[in-house]
Length: 78
Image (cartoon, rainbow, N blue to C red; front, side, top):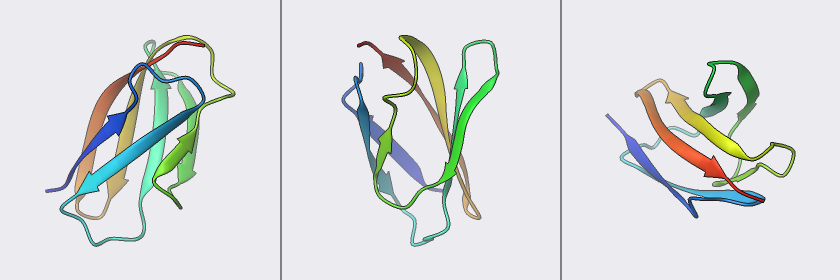
């Protein structure tokens, strides 16, 4: 099972990820608002996510690979 951490949190425009215990290059990230609505989903190419298009608030960031799923809360503050 893999895990990840994110920083900074609260974030402004970019979130950096530190993904541990995975060798899988095929990783998908999804971001949900606190109502459970999907607001962003993409294949993770770099260990940075551009969140400049998202509004202030609390979100759930989910990382999926064939090794499992991990989630973390993130606060966006502009």
